[in-house]
Length: 427
Ligand SMILES: [Zn+2]
Image 1 (cartoon, rainbow, N blue to C red):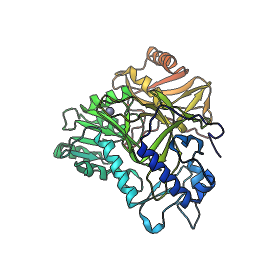
Image 2 (spheres, rainbow, N blue to C red):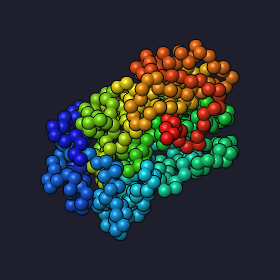
Image 3 (tube, protein in one colour):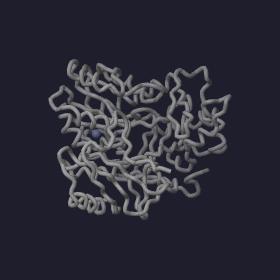
Image 4 (cartoon, rainbow, N blue to C red):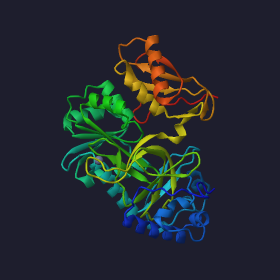
């Protein structure tokens, strides 16, 4: 499939550096020389100018997976000789079978460099202590942990699901920063009084939410700390983006290693990168060796900004709105569960901030009203007025008719990792 082929609109408004253009040219030549997958996909002589990139076909995760064989468990996009590989991560597959992410030593090095820039943007400084709560396991997020030492931080790994040890560590080692998922950060702030702790920076990653103003405000109040977010994409690299202290979108920390585009998720057509532009994030490796990807569809729906940030950085910034897979269409209107949560959070302190969207039919298209369970704050009673007020506000902001069902405090499940905002349909 050549999504977006035909008469692609060339996105304007972004001047890629000449270094990126040069890296791209070399990356494309490397891929065409070594990968059967891309030779077949891109044809014999695609343009190698970065400004023409939207003319090339998009790469889908399923296409890569389909080329996996017993002889080549990585897929036909593998470019490096197996003897050049130094590390192999895997992603959790939706179909059950994981897919492998092989890396050469220069790939690992570039990942750590990019992640270091993303996390350093948050303002953490050499000599400070940071507690991490990611389980390295098989996932690429583990590669980002090396970034903390690269920045010069004292890294204290705790891992997932060990709240007692985490709280003890915060009390005894008095770290300056913690890194966790926004769901876990919220859960901890709810269950412990952390406002007087040593932690002054909370770095959240792993799922969207840290950039939603209402959710962020709640986290900042609970922790008495500044909250900034970071984001990676399993197949491309960990912590590619990281927010600075201005909290005005995540900077591309992996600049020079990754090229970014936006597309219309329905048609695959390229969208112009401009302030406030929205679309699915598409990423291309620029200096990758083991299994580089060209125009990879991330399934992440983001908002982008091209104007310089108040911090002085001039590169692109993004905020992730949600997974395009989580998007629902209610009578023709696109809605992300995270956007509903953001509206619900306007009703704090009467609501806890936990919601669950409950689709009534299979697939993305839903008939209104869309049922949404909203959890009340501790000590708040349900009232028809509140449910109605939330329904009205959702309709006003998102142009979607919802049915708000209020439930008592502590009804919805908390997570020490990532939260599900959408209830799976029971068949
Ligand atoms: Zn900035």
